Length: 434
Image (cartoon, rainbow, N blue to C red; front, side, top):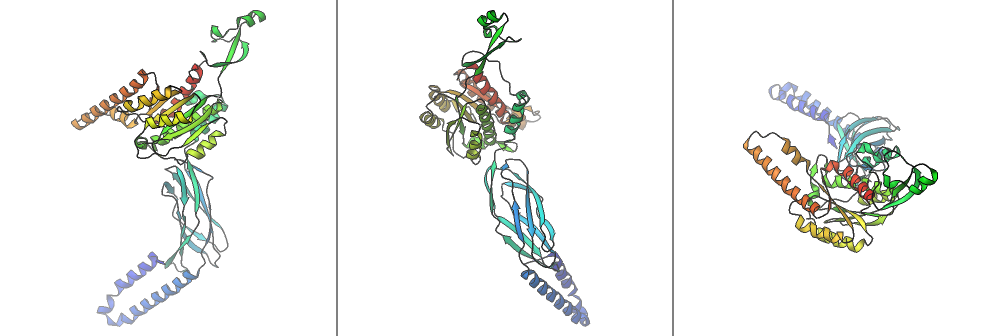
């Protein structure tokens, strides 16, 4: 039982009025009478609040939540008393959610349901738990509130933000991939499967012309090709401490997961098999499998994976991948490069390249670019500017070292990783390198 502000105010006023009997003894009986009345009212009111039955409650949650995306949670309350009851609602939501619209105070008419709606916005991925529902039921005279805990425990999954995948689905249906910055290149080179003959179109290369068919039909006929299907794509994701870095609301690790899911969706639509491996922390492995339904399995497997405080171990990751993946594949290694990494990373990549085609994707902290754009007005800012430029130069040397060794490499800010990887994947498919 918790006293309300109304009861506390009455007690405070009575305490102030208690100075009067010290000077005017005639009013002492009146003061004691008021004290007895307030005490009796508080006792009766508290007794009535204690005997009131606990309200019934139901919680309605979405089937799942997406990281950083707001959603609505509704509570249905009902009580079986004979009179309207005022109730303050406190839902015991997960700490990893930002909440708006709580607490709420509502009037519960007898025997009727009242709906309480509020908004949640997850700031972390994984399995979340709503522990229960905390209610404060006000007494009839409003002097007390009784705490009521309802064990309304429910769990929900918070997935990576799949809005990018949904957007890609809509754009793909309208054949408008360029709106995402994804550009399909004209087919060239080897690694193509013959698809069909068709009339020559403006822009076709001369090597596409089928001269025998053109002579037979007396008009130019082109050969049309399609990319090879059924190739393996394996994502190798760094779960080390560097992926904990944040640019905005999302960590580098969350940006990486979004990129993995988008590229995986594109690859599955292309008819390729998609696999996944993680290292330096939470180690998971999914063998490459075809089929668009694979994307659901990826969501359910990766939604709760988290970066750790471990340092990246590229050599161990490469060795384990070679033991697990026998067929030649495009290995997309996603990490956060530093200038000191080449000594460890290059031998691991050389080991992988004996059998696989390797694409290294690294994320550059956007805060560094922002620091360089700031104007230098004092000595401290000059030091920060010089240190940032020196760091970026050393980092660029690490990237250039990979490229000079013949390694495919992507170095972008986290927000550009998804589209950049899709474009590189499509380029690799067209070039026939895999």
